[in-house]
Image (cartoon, rainbow, N blue to C red; front, side):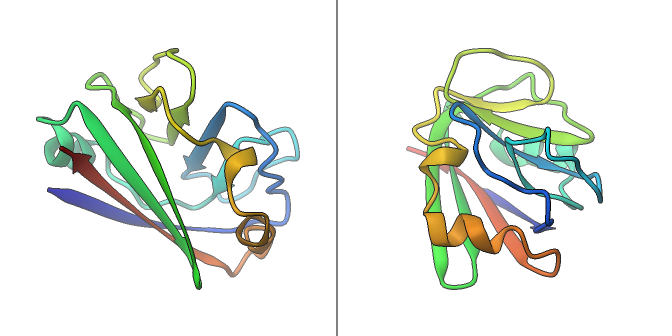
Length: 132
């Protein structure tokens, strides 16, 4: 199964965090949120949990215009992020954490793609799916 959602770029997106990446439902962010790569996200935590409940590993595909990035990680069944969805390279788990042990974080994203995230009109599509 898979689940997709949309979010948007923002002028304060820096994508400089070395160990995490995050999508938030907030419409505005400060420069302090250096792990945020999408704002105004329309994900539904319950639908994500229903789609991925039998998963151990998941794939996150991030699409920005002609660019696409795949992030693989271990699924956190305790995910219940009503406002933020966080992917971590580390093993730290909170209810905002969808995945741990990720193979990419913000600084690993394609630089051209990351620069497009500074445009507030830039649509970002995120597809979450089970890995076998």
